[in-house]
Length: 463
Image (cartoon, rainbow, N blue to C red; front, side, top):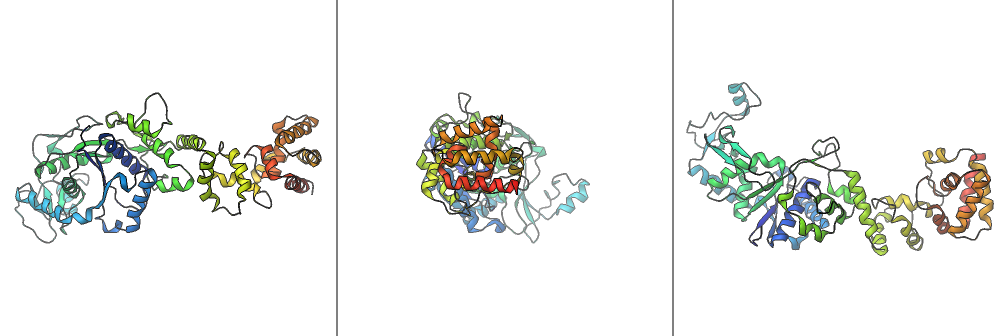
C-alpha cells in the first residue's frame, strides 16, 4: 500500500443520519488514503428516490467535516445518480457477452416451483431466450462450476462455490440498475483500487468480483471490516441503539475523542493504550491488522475516552467548547462566574452537555430541586447541621479552605465526618448530592446567596 495511485472510496447512502459504523469506515478509508499518498473518493449513492434529499447529503458532508474529513481531504462528492448512463452501458456490455439474460419470474413463481421461501432463484429463465419486455428483469449468469475467491486484507481468502451463487438481478423490470452493478460501474469509472466496507457486504463481494471480470477489469483490493455490536452482542440497530453520529455530537462528545474511539473498533494501537494522538494512529494503523471479530461499541469506554480528551483541553478551549451548551441553557450565564467554575468542572464532566447541570446552581435564583437528592441528604440531624453551618458561615472569611474548616467543626459537634456533615449543605445550596467541589462552589456563589439557601432549606425542613 505504497503507491500514490491508490484510490479508496467511501460511498454512503443518504439516510437522514450518519451511522457510527459508516463513520468508522470513513475513517479507515481516510487513513489508508493519507498513509499511501492516495486519494479518498466520496460518492453519495443517491439513486434511491426515497433517500434522495439534499439535506441528508449535506448531513453526511457536515458529519465528515466534524470528524476532520473536510472537502480538502477527498475528491468529490460524486453522485451515483449522475452516472446512470455508465450503469446502462455496463448492463449492455454484459448482455452482449451473453453473461446475462431476461427473466419474467416473480418471487411467488420461484417459491411455487421450489416450495421453499428461503431458496434463491432457480435459474428457470436461463435458456428461455426471452427478450426485453414489460415486467422482465435482467439476471447475471453465474458460473455453474468452479469457485470465486475474494482476496480480503482482513479475512484472508474466503472462497465461494459458484454453484451456490444464484443468478442475481443486475437490472430491475423498470430498467433501473440495482446496487450490485451500479456500484461496480461507478468504481470502474472512478478508478477505485481499494474497497473498505462493512462485513455485511462480504456476501456481495463474489458477485461483484464476477461483474468486474465480466466488464474486463481487475477487481479492487477488498477489506470487509467487522460488524459493530451492542452490549448484548447484537448488531447495532438504529431502531434499538443510539447509532447516529449527530446524536453523540449533540450530547457533547469531542470530535477528536470520537475519532480515536472509532478507530479502536476492530483495531488496536501499540502499547496497550486507548487514548492515542491522531498522528500516532495515522502512523500505526494497518488495515491488515484489523480483527475480523465483531467490535463492541462500548458507550462507557467512549465516555471515559471523551472525558480524557476534555481534560486535555486548555482552559480557554474548554470554555469555548461549553458555550454552545450554555447558550441553550434555561438561565443567563455570567461569564466571569462561569470562568471560575469551569476550572472545577473540566475535571468532572465526561460529555460537554453535563456542564449545564454542573453549574446551573450558580445562575439560578434558587437551587434546582431534586427529590432523590433531598430525601437522601435531609435526614436527621440535617436541620440542626444547617442551622450550625449558617451560624458558622455568617462571619467566616469567604474562602474555600476556611469554609471547609468551619463545616468540619460543625460536623465534629454532631460526631460526623465531613462527608456526612456536608451532604445537607450541598443539597441546600446546589440542589444535588453530586457536583462540583462544595467549598469552592460556595466561594464562587458568595456569602449572601449561600446563607439564604441554607436558611431556606432549614425552613423547609422545620416548617
